[in-house]
Length: 276
Length: 243
Ligand SMILES: Nc1ncnc2c1ncn2[C@@H]1O[C@H](COP(=O)(O)OP(=O)(O)OP(=O)(O)O)[C@@H](O)[C@H]1O
Ligand SMILES: [Mg+2]
Image (cartoon, rainbow over the protein chains, first blue to last red):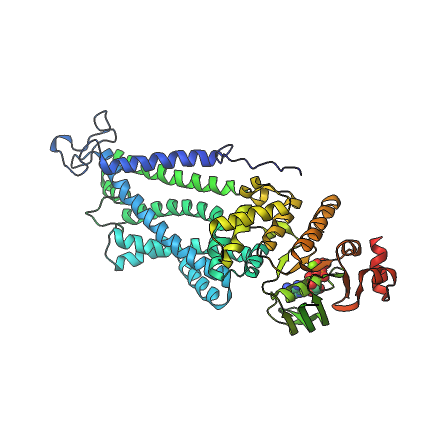
């Protein structure tokens, strides 16, 4: 019997998006992790002799108006942002997978009700909704995570639901049923592995959106509290330095945010292209 | 002889959903279908496209939500071999996983026993151990059908419903798979409800045949008898088409 060509196993070959996205993302994660254990200077220690310095060999990203080293603050503060993004994607993703599999597999009334709720959530521009909710609630990492996680559920629920609805009608699911597999066995063992290829890009885009959302919310002053350091919070702090002729604070923080979301979105696009 | 399946006065209709522009329609697909299938027998079901063969298979397997009449099994867990092997094999799983899953569901065997059974069955369908780690996308059409047969037979069913198991394959592979099905029947004492639109294919495998036209069984009999003395004009037509 003729053998068919075995699929190309190297996922990076010829996939420019995946290669670049993975490289940037890995670099940014290492940059952030390093910032949690070591920074060039103490990120929160003011220095009267080094206030508002421009970038130099001693302070690559310059210093803020209290004389704190911006590179150190960014390395450290990126951890808060990444932690928020991770928790948002984790909680929103798990809830989305559960809702998407149940609605996609069973359909019917449950499907109608849950998906209408998802529609309702997405009907509002999500940042605006987050702003309103956080105006009412206390600012802080925990509340940002919960609000964003809830807002992110529909995007995961939709892709998972579509895949479950498609797979449910496939013959291998009918066969599993004939062999005596129950619905939860079918959902977990038979269908879920087929959903990873569409879930992975969604997760990557989720990280992208979560970083962006944290930055926007904290920038507008309704994200993390004043005592917590995150990329968005630093962007907020840097606003008045721009006018005082010291744009590097905003620029360097902005650069780190841009690199982070660029990495995640390239990664997402690369993962998506791998499915073709 | 042991009766293994009894179907009486089976009537099935599909209701197409009404829309703003189209009235709700009820289409009768199976009309007063009755037959028996005995242990060790290979019963053919032939008929043109849309005559209701797959619907009958689904009713026998208990996959239809609604039907009138009775379908009685005298054996547990009938298995099925579908027409299109590609969608019948889970693309995310390997051959080994696909064959082990039915054994896990029945849960009677420990790991070494499962492995022994999987390897034995794989050999019986003419595949070597190296196929265990392959995904369906790395198999040819004939190999897929072999894996599907192996996964169906690994739980030792007595009744197998085969819905056009060879029509997606080219002629030489068809002959191989038909030979395999005949051999498995002899070896395991299987009964087949074997569906095809091709009289020739049915002739190669079956002892008895039912001819279905527009949801009704118009003629039943021993395969030689039907071939030599077809009574119904539609049967004659099918035989002529096969030659
Ligand atoms: N799920 C369904 N809903 C509505 N109508 C259906 C459905 N499945 C089949 N039908 C209709 O029932 C009739 C019989 O279909 P069936 O699939 O049983 O035919 P078949 O003999 O297997 O045909 P083929 O040889 O093409 O596979 C057809 O007219 C078909 O359009
Ligand atoms: Mg059919």
